[in-house]
Amino acid sequence: ASERPTQSGAAPILVASNRGPVSFRTEDDGTLSLRRGGGGLVSGLSAIDDPNAVWVCAALSDADRAAARQAPEGRLDRAGHDVGGQAVRMLDIDPETFARAYNGVANSTLWFVHHLLYDIPTKPAFDAGFRTEWAAYRAYNTAFAEALAAEAAPGAAVLVQDYHLSLVPALLRALRPDLRIGHFSHTPWAPPEYYRLLPDDVAAEVLEGILGADRAAFLTRRWALAFADCCEAVLGASVDRDALTVTLPQPSAGGAPIGRTTRLGVHGLGADGEFLRERAHRPDVDERLAALREAVGDRRTVVRVDRTELSKNIVRGLLAYRHLLRTRPEWLDRVVHIAFAYPSRTDLAEYREYTAEVQRLAAEINAEFATADWQPLILHVDDDFPRSLAAYRLADVALVNPVRDGMNLVAKEVPVVSDRGCALVLSREAGAHEELADDAITVNPFDVVATADALARALAMPPADRADRTERLAAAATALPPQQWFLDQLNAL
Ligand code: G6P
Image 1 (cartoon, rainbow, N blue to C red):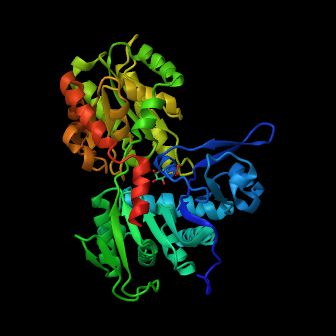
Image 2 (spheres, rainbow, N blue to C red; image 1 turned 180 degrees about the vertical axis):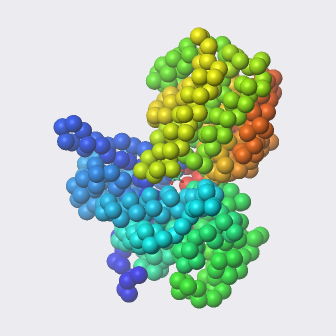
Image 3 (cartoon, protein in one colour; image 1 turned 60 degrees about the vertical axis):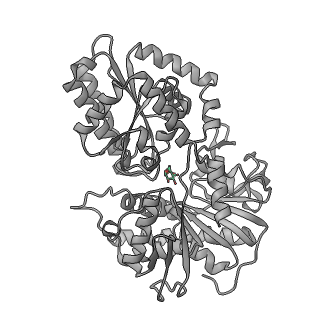
């Protein structure tokens, strides 16, 4: 942290996230073209109609970095790009530092910790290489804190997003004590006994980084309380579980001020019902729906759509489907499993191997059961949003079985979009389960046999029951749409 406060900027509201609302691509002729991203945060921010709001994000590719360098004062809107009314400042962080921070710390370490993904006998092992990555993570967080400090108007509200940026709140507070700072975790939070796999200083610095915020918010109460448990166990903080506050009682390793209290918040992000219903009935979706119908015929469908992500538990889902076909011959030739697993974090070997494992198992299932006119499993490992919406519409059963998930928006989107009502098989380890348990069929995601049983129950659910449940699921799923979710956080800050 610098000694003197940074000069302030003009933005009254700021959002910071690793992945921003836009990305760039270099076309064959060398020009840069822009794509707008989706997701809750993008539609959430659209509720703010303040021309001075700024979204600070990282350049994620060479094309992004080129766009960031061309933009006057680093602001993409001024470079003539249509970024949908938002001023976006993309940080041109050097690629090596970025890769260490994003792949090494954020996605291979913090994501693994919060989703309980390590193969404990050999991993993690925090060696000298990790220390280099940790230094890069600090540098990357510092770059964000400095950019936010420069853009923020006096007393501005800053909403910092996710595990990539856990050090930003404390770093930013040191630069700009006048700001109101919020942090939002889109992931689960690990229980203390697992969180303490991290090196002690790293474990403390991450918590103190977030506690630099006035308010640290989570998707469910379960994750907020786990965070509080970690603050207590690692930092000796005092926690009020009713008022949801965490107070640092002593000077801590990172020198955080004595007695500062951080409020915890819970905002269960919901699906954007209005957007989804409209988007799911456009011609490009209809076209893909027709193709899927052709392949499925009059058979029932079990649908899943995920990033190809370790925590989504795609492999055990496929094993459950295989068990269903092996043990319940009445479903042979009467069901098709549609599994869309789009590419994610392919820089990491674990993710590449996981994708290969999903493909291998899918091929095995088709080889075991397929007949001349029945393909029991349709797997796609590329990204096609309209095709995903088409699958939602066609779903008789949605399978959402993560080993652990901050929320899981697929569980909330399918009931909204499904044409005929659809039974939801839902892991009790997904944040969404807190809100959808009453009308979903709950599964322990590790229990393959129980998951197969749940699929059988879901497939056999009477249509009237299914329709009633879907209606209630859709209502619960859209209770807090992204715009309101965003405004609630801002107001609470
Ligand atoms: C999760 C995280 C987000 C992240 C997204 C996609 O939902 O909470 O912060 O953007 O995964 O992951 P990626 O690494 O592609 O940004």
